[in-house]
Each structure stands twice: as C-alpha cells, then as structure tokens.
Length: 389
Image (tube, rainbow, N blue to C red; front, side, top):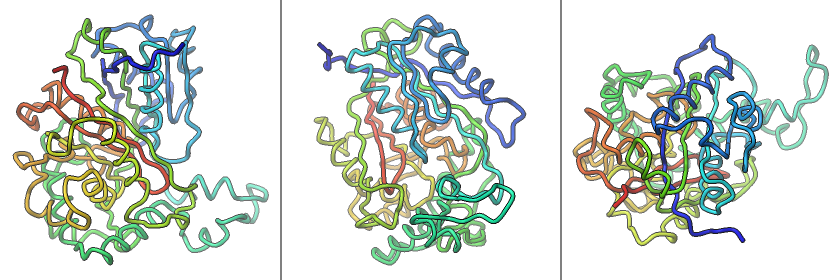
C-alpha cells in the first residue's frame, strides 16, 4: 500500500554557475547544482533515492553522480517551462512513499539567436540543408513568426489582457522597475543596474505590446531542489521548509490558439486547486514568487491566486504593494527577467530561502508562508510553502 500521508519538505537548494553561453557541458552544470543543493542540506549522494528532471535525463544524471539504484525517476518530455511539472511530480513521489528523498532538477541553456521554436522544429519536414516545410497547425503561424513564445504566449496574451481590463504599459513598467530594485539586492541576479520607467518604455517591442524588458533573460543554468519527508528534513543542516499544498493544471495542448480565454488560462484552475488543498488563505501569504516569463503572466497569477481582483494587478503593483515593505513582496530575487530564465526553479528556491531567513538585504521579516508558481497558457503549476511551525 502506498502511504499518501507523508509531509514533504524542502531540505536543500542549489544553483550551478549562471551565465550566458557558458563553456561548461550540461553534465558539469548539473553536477554543480546538485553538489550545491546537497551541501546546503548537509547530505551526500547516498541519501538520494529519486530524481526528477526537466532538460536532462534522470537515469543519466543518477549514473553520472553515483546515485544508483533509484526507487523513483522522472524525465519531463513537456516542451516549455516545466520546472513546476518536475517539482510537483517529485513532491508527489515523496508524499506517496515511492521514494524518500528526491532531486528536482531544471537544466536550461541560452537559446541561439534566430532559431525556430521547438514546436516549429518538431513540425518541420524536408532535408536539413534544403527548403523546409511546416505541417499541421504550425503552417498557419510559423510563416508569420507566430510560433515563437513571445508571440503566441506573450504578445497575444498581453494584448488581450490590456484590452479587457485597461491595464497600461506604464503599470507593467512599474512592475519591471520594482523587480529590478529587488534584483539589485540579489548577488545571484544577472541584471542589477537601476531601471527607470522611462527606460522601460523606451525598450523595443518584441511582439507588441510585449517589450524586451517584459521577457525573462536567457541564460545557461541548472537549478536543484531536494525534497524529502518532514521527519528526515528535521535532522538535516537547514530548517525544513514544508510543502503545505501543491497543484497542476492543464487546459489545452501547446497550441495556445485553442485556449478558451487568454486571461483565465491554466493559471485559474491551478490556483483554485491549490487553495482547495489547504486551510490557509491569500491573506496568510507573506511573500509571493510568481512566474514572469512575460510580465503579463505575473499579473495573472496575482489575480487568480486571490491577491487582488480580476484586472486589478496593474493598480496593485502601481500602489507599491509588491515592493519590499509592501503588503505582498513579489519576486524578491528579481524574477526571471533579472536573475535569468531558470524556468520556474528560481521562484521555488527564493521562496525557500525567504522562509529560512536567508535572503539577506531582500529578506521579508518574519516570513512564514510563501507561494511560488510556474508557467501559464496550456499548463501551470504552483506550491504553497510554510516554515516548520
């Protein structure tokens, strides 16, 4: 029988070296991140019996790092920012008792300029050195650049959101400047120089109305989070961060044109499921760490998680509520637009560090409850974390 009553905790977190076009192999970056997380937890490779990964192969990582045999392994085949998928699967594996201590790993490399999206590449036919044809749904979008995430997820979504609710470019600009203020306090952030509203508004459009500074910053990075049982975590180096609730939601395939409502996509059912699994409420949350692959996604999470009403995120941000010292400090590490595109893993790691009191000059005093989220559109995931109260 599977024991589904185990409490799950974060025991350790770690990053590899982070940068753009780093000379290291994927294996070396994975080794760095896993070693950092193990050291953070005060654990060794012999303590691990499960691996979940996105952007790498779990069994290969286990073999590379001498962690065999494994009681559980998972390799995401999802195309997209899937750390939440990997994390939720890893949490569920520990909670069920299939394994007792597992790594959740996200490997990502900076994309080369001018390459088609993975979706478009998968749909292409023809010899690699000759004319390429695009089949399926991509034939209607790829010739016009519509298969790039900045268009099908960023531009379409942001335009619909602004049109429906009257949120302004200036409000998105305030959000960008606040996140940069937070990043300036984070030595891990790649972008730390001050950012003004005028500079945001002067940045070029990538897929109007999405500007360059609305997009997460491409980089090479591996992130690792160690999940284990609460009982085991209490005997380790760092105070445990407990997983109070977790959720996933999928509402369509990766063709974003099939979404019924761009402004109430997978974020909406994921948020509803998350709150249905806990007695805590939005008012209990001390810090939020919400996915910002494009700025509009962060606004949608704020609304659907219940921190403000539909269409009110712009005003919520403009009033300073998401700043350090505000009612809901948001993305205190600077968010992926500044720390780099780590595809959701940085939000989980920053939430854990806030609850452990390790965020230094960006620490939220007395933080006991935090939420982090990842993705938007077709699929999404989120988790609510607490201190060991």
